[in-house]
Amino acid sequence: MHSDTKSYVELQTLYKNKAAAESAIVHSHVRKVLQQLGKSKDYVTQEDVVLVCRNSTNLRLVRTRSIEEEYTKPKAEEWSWMLDDREENSHNLYVLLRAADRFRTHFGAFPGASEASVAELAKYKEVVSTVCSEMGVSVSSLGDEMMQEMVRYGGAELHTIAAVIGGVGAQEVTKVLMQQFVP
Image (tube, rainbow, N blue to C red; front, side, top):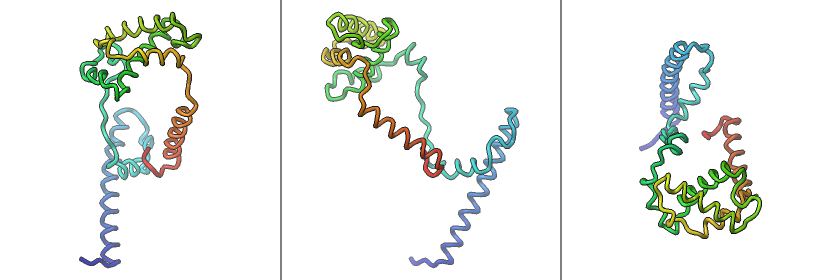
């Protein structure tokens, strides 16, 4: 197969015209929806529609549960088996962080924030036990070492983690502001 410049330009023009026609259809539909919602027709510009259409291949639908559902109707049976895996700690940390949040709600501070004492650890273990029973998870599957570490940690922010999260957040904001990449 061989190609020449003229054929390439014709093909490129064909694709550009098709994309422009399809984005015009989408923009027309968006204007109808805006009118139904009582918004100005210029609320979403043609440039916005073109940008969305251009990047539509990167869109993904992700369905998750709401925070309210997670707190009122936990579905731990879907992932509780992972608590026994000592190599994977993310689910253990999820339960322990939920317990730390509950501890903060009840006692006004994170466990170990004032002092990492035996009494503080005992109070935290009681809260962990309550959270585990509400979620239908066995407390024995959570390691004592992780609970001790949560109390020793005292709700502190590690500077290295904060720096990484800040850097990633800054990159995403830059993508949005530059309008060159999909965040």
